[in-house]
Structures are given as structure tokens and as C-alpha cells.
Image 1 (cartoon, one colour):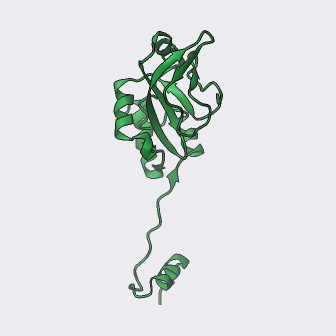
Image 2 (cartoon, helix red, strand yellow):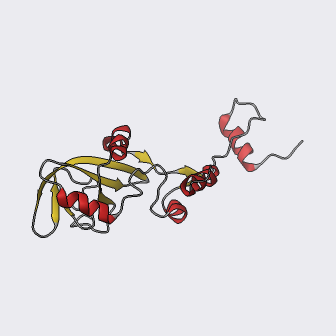
Length: 169
């Protein structure tokens, strides 16, 4: 009789009426969090705001006036989502105030115009981004109320994603 692995044995014990030769398939390895940051830095695959600079954010929010569209980019629990909001005001200290705050509840609705960071949680996971058409489409496709897009990648897909980012096909 051929030797069975511990996984096959455990699977057949639990399944009871299933065929003895049916084996459980192992899940493929998933990259998330630190593993993704090591590979892609802040350039998460599927993030439409990845190319935005602090300079672009500063320019947009410096010229923004009350009622203009504002977008908060937030990562939380291995997810990426955008909260579409409105500018409700500015002050002389370089802050912009929004109608909404980050979904995590940290920091409140005040952001620095210069950097896009939250005033009361500058090291947090929420930043302002420029509301480009791509960002707005992403926000509609992956709504914040559904916790946005999952930031998990199968290890087998990594080489192709690296080639995409380098512009190789």
C-alpha cells in the first residue's frame, strides 16, 4: 500500500464518506502586508494613486475651494479603499478640512495640505490623494463600505506583476 501524507490521512479521517484517494489541495502562498511592501514598496498593484507625488497633492489641495471633491486613500486590514468626500474648509495653518474622516476613525477629518497626511494621525494609514478619474472609478468599483480591494497576491502572480510595473510584457 502506498504511503499517504499526513494531510491526506487527516483529510480522509474528517471527510468520512469521501473516497480514500481524494487528496486535499494545498492553498497557494499568499503575499500581503510586509511581503507586498518588500516587493512593491508603496506601489501596490491595482492602486491608481501609486504615481501621485506629494507635490501633486499639495498643488491640488492648495487650489481647492469649499465644495471641491477630495479623496482619502486608506489601507486597512490588507485592503485598499478610497473615501470620496468634499472640502469643507481650510485654515491659515495649512490644513484642509473634509466632510468625511478615515473609516478607521483615527485622526479625524483634518489633513495637511503640504503632505496629504492626517493632522492628528500623520503616521496612520490614511492620506489625501488627487481625485483623478482613475481614483474615482476605483472608489466606485471597490466601495469603502465594502472595505475596498483586497491587497493579497498569489505568489505565482508576482513575476508577471513585477514585469508589468517595469513596463515589460
